[in-house]
Length: 212
Image (cartoon, rainbow, N blue to C red; front, side, top):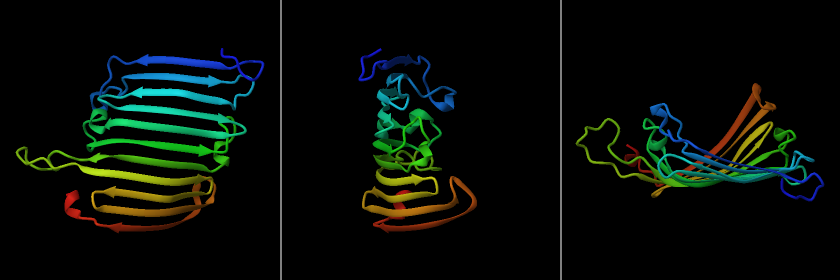
């Protein structure tokens, strides 16, 4: 227990897990080496929650960190930070991707309420390298292809009857993609009653040879 503003005090949960047999998915193993959790709760008001720390160590040099909080007055927020991700360390069958970045999720709703009743705002940034090594189908003696630098930024808003991709920007060398879109639903959280989609995109400096 930790002293809090309310008489019941706060509950604090700490946990550390280690996986001595971590490995790739294609090896039939879990790609998680260790996990550390530090969570704080208010027994007098379960809508109040603070994720003080969530650290996950992935195979290779991958690290996933998260912090967040939720309350009836302030809503909910979650921040994710990814560093040193190598997709081939997760599953050797996946396309090669090395990445790092951040993702932020915000809503006015508390975890104890109806999260879908309020719009969910997403903001993210991701940078890294895509590909590298021999081209697909190339003979073993073929020269390695240089990896493609990649940067992605996005802003989106998810509501019960709409999904708005407010801004998507993708950069890879001189190539640049800017896009926005909106998916509107006639029935909340369902495609059954029909839907409409509007989108817009601009591409500059694209050389298709770089992606072959």
